[in-house]
Amino acid sequence: MVDVSSQSRAWKRLSRSRSAWIGTTIVLALVLMALAADWVSPYGPQERAAVGSHAAPSAEKRRRPRRAGLMTLDEWNAERKAIWSRPSPSDDEPNGIACPHCGEETLDRSPGKMLDGSPPRMEIHCNSECGFVGRRIA
Image (cartoon, rainbow, N blue to C red; front, top):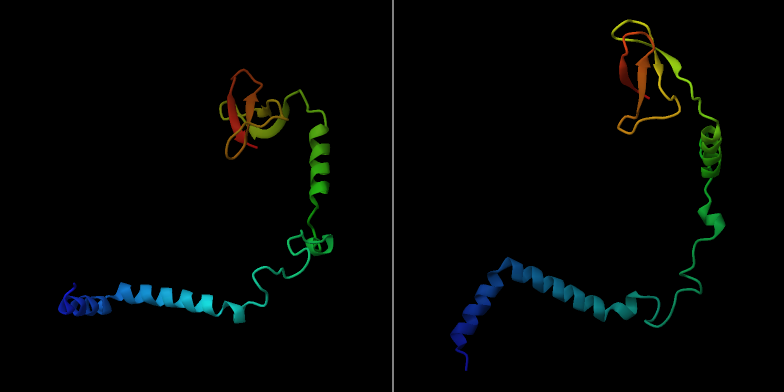
């Protein structure tokens, strides 16, 4: 048998504990929500709100007007495909950058190819006798 004085001491200690009051409040709130569920919910546990409520949105709801100046994905892909389907020039192209060694104009090596990195780069070289090879930001 439990001593009455130990029960009262335990109750006093529990009633002074902040975490005990928070836990009791949460449990009571959950019990009250469960008891009031029949009055709060418009549908019973076995009813559905509407037929097809889990269906995907219709096409009218998904389509939004396009903002001015923006392309659709198909237009963007078609444009990129046209750009990348062009034959890439195999000859080196002058780029208007002066060689740091001799001052002559440098050339882009393989102008259709970029080197990986952030930012992407292109390899350049000098066509004169100095033999400079470097990289520029693409």
